[in-house]
Image (cartoon, rainbow, N blue to C red; front, top):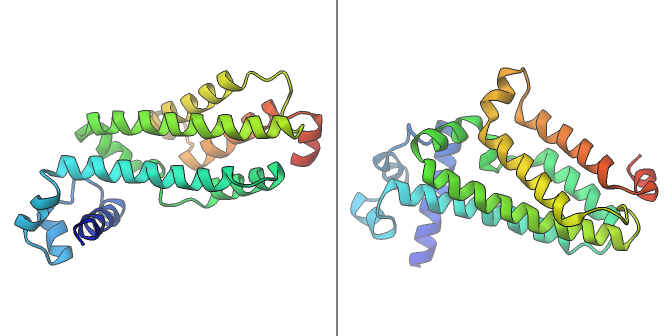
Length: 199
């Protein structure tokens, strides 16, 4: 019961943050939305900072679960197809909302740094697994340095999140960045057999 209440606070706060931004939503606003007293809120979270940290951790777990589901696919062709569709359709990722990233960087730098690190480690882990599976099936280049490639791609994505203002200043957005990065990544790692599949 207590865990359900905690999850409900995280879910409601997350929806409000996505809609209104983190800075503009107070604990009072969250409590009002939930019909809850601040005293009850503080049973579960000692501060708004703690709530933000928990929300970000929950977002990483959400991303991790999606990537784990993909990793269970036995066919590399299905994995790539579903991964690309997932990248196009995903709307619940904090990293895709510039206002949230801006608020996190400015007002919650420690939580944002921890979040970036968790995202980097999660992405690296699963990209490495995907590439290893692809190489076993002959779709990924046999001579590819998988460890370095997974590290590089996860790092590029992590830095892009942090510097989204620079990307937007040049007339681009995170969606375009993700699509372009994926195009470069896919073409760089696939074997001839893999490229035939991709085309």
